[in-house]
Amino acid sequence: MIDRMDAKVKLNNGVEMPYLGLGVYLLSPGKQAEAALKHALEIGYRLFDTGRFYGNEFDVGEAVRKGGVPREELFVTTKLWNSDHGYNKAISACKGSLESLGLKYIDLFLIHWPVEGLRNDSWKALEKMYEEGKFRAIGVSNYTISHLEDLLEHARIIPAVNQVEFSPFLYQRDMLEFCRQHGIQLEAYSSLTRGIKLSNKTIVSMAQKYQKTAAQIMLRWALEHRVVVIPKSAHPERLQENANIFDFSIEPPDMEILNNLNENFRVAWDPTYIR
Ligand code: NDP
Image 1 (tube, rainbow, N blue to C red):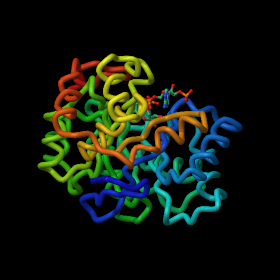
Image 2: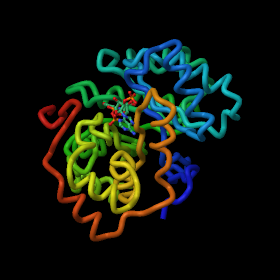
Image 3: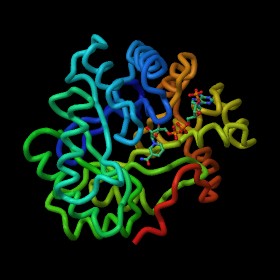
Image 4: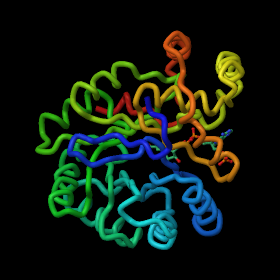
């Protein structure tokens, strides 16, 4: 049972990753990001998920460098943006992220999107940065099973993580199983469906049963599947709410009910058409 906020999962290279993090997409650089990151650190968040595309790597770096928590207790993820694919461009972008963050190393560096034709060259760049010790772990995002199969054929290093959209309304059961079989940790984004499904009646009645909120039920459901979660919020009370998911568990029959909510519902982009 995952019953502490500092619970971590061991990745396939032995590096430990927190089960809970703060996603920072759409946190505006400057005051908003600074305040949210400060609150998150105070509450006990130790993982921050940014991306070159989000425009707030600098803010995350500041919080990590100046937030008063030792660097080794923090876990920073960022991502390679789509226009930075290809070996040489990816190397420059990796270095650019290290510079924007102002960090000596990044804990997890992901390929943001499986760009056709170029993604395996970009992966070689990530492997090089990993071997040079600049990244503690490397992984991918938005990869379908067929993208992963393609990568596994070409890679020297097996990705540690695949970050995908994952919620009771997009229960990617086959992906979860595939990743388990290959030692790839699944990480959920938009696991609150950006708020859209928080008033679903099954979620609401489950929340009443467990004396929790709808958001907490959605996040705990992912944790029960041993999937890392990175809900985003700019509000202190929601940051706290989203972190209060370690003092209960969802019973197997209720998990089954939640699993059955799947309707392949997405709030973000759909990678299934990318070859
Ligand atoms: P989430 O499902 O985490 O939802 C965030 C939204 O829900 C915000 O509008 C937030 O509003 C609101 N919210 C947060 N907590 C609560 C709560 N307890 N009750 C009610 N509403 C709440 O969506 P995201 O798409 O932001 O996903 C999370 C993270 O995943 C991103 O920040 C990013 O790091 C990552 N991501 C990665 C992608 C990829 O392609 N790899 C794609 C999309 C996201 P408010 O801030 O006002 O509280």
